[in-house]
Length: 402
Ligand code: SAH
Ligand code: SF4
Image (cartoon, rainbow, N blue to C red; front, side, top):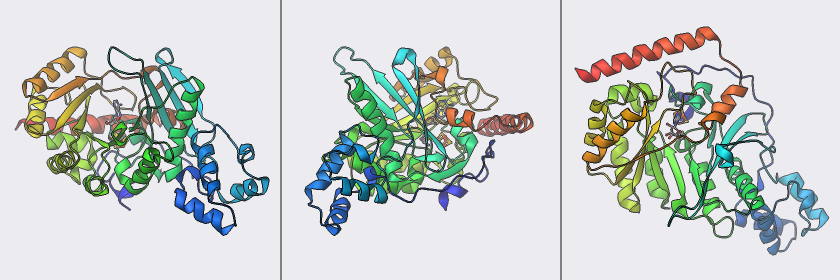
């Protein structure tokens, strides 16, 4: 399977986990389409309107067990309990940060694997309405192995089911309802590479945008990819106008091979071309994410390479100082470097925003909490990994200078 092989050639996962526990075979209710639920009810001689009642509990309610679905007869509740799970996630551990504006959750799956989500609230400012964004995971672990990313250190465990993805959104929707707020945005920027689990991610996004379920606008969903070319093509074919984000991190191919190992399989120029087709089809600007690492990808040469790569594209660039979480030998770029880099992009007519990292103190960068829980890697393995990264990035930087 693709997910298991894309990491070839990248630095190896640092942390090895014990085998996962058994899976619960019952699908999560939030991933079951209404038509399928109606069919299941019909087979049991139940009226079709029960599907609506169940969906209301799943989407608008706060019930934590089937027993609490009081609008349904008890016999049906028992049958539902045998066939489905009301939620696929154990109640999460939630940690606040940034004075409560950021909340980070660690969720346990049925087989004991952990995934993470982050809620970021932005108060209303001027004409901008208040927003609440849930950052969710698409896979447990990730096979791409970007060396600055805590999820990358874990390696790949498994794809998430549709309900496991949707339930992350439900957790934050319910949490926000408790404080009288609404969820306004969902970003696939937690653990995993969404476009290596593209069918389930698209099904989950369809559930979240379905008017009879959650009804979030498609443009309020951002799918972030490290550059899975066939996945972008699949998004074009699927139709809905989600916001596409591409994790760029380097425009020079030799350096991107090191920072985003998937570049060896899907070269960035082809990814940008596909993202351009997505922008042309949907009329939506593509966001390019660029994690700034001091002395590695933050030089004027790199900035000019980005201008060369993205000139003429319907694109916007977010510069994000690296969150120093993974076991890398690197540091985040200082603010002056980030500003100088941004100035070159803007002079090249590229819309650019400098982002601040939210929740740095609670490790609100993808995968960090799960990596911490998984245990500390052996010091010798960390040292070897750091040496390898120094060597590879130095070679990539000098190759680009020649
Ligand atoms: N796998 C997808 C989506 C999840 S990662 C992707 O890579 O796009 C979401 C974003 O967080 C990506 O842009 C990723 O590069 C970024 N990221 C990962 N580790 C980071 C770190 N240590 N500091 C800042 N951003 C990081
Ligand atoms: Fe995977 Fe994205 Fe982390 Fe890279 S940055 S290892 S693609 S989750």
